[in-house]
Length: 134
Image (cartoon, rainbow, N blue to C red; front, side, top):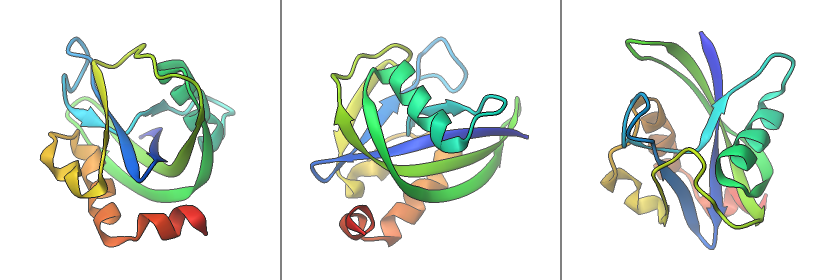
């Protein structure tokens, strides 16, 4: 099983989502940005590195949010997601097709990668402002 991390980046009461590259696996599906955890790397270090590499921004990791596993036909992953806030930088798409800032209630309007669906389901159950502030 491959360990991967993702960031639920919150800014001005909206969440950053990214659309996958059309030439990669799971083309054009939406996701919470992140990537594979490298050897000797912590999940927090991974999510910060991946966000910087893929989007060119710095984030502040607030807390671990959810862990789930998903079996695709090409890989079995454990997805560790973190709540984060955008600290600085201008978003530049280095790997993704598009990005959007959306309200929590709008997430289900997008076609997400299957591994990300449990994150959306958990987000629907929580008060995001409360989690960010505490």
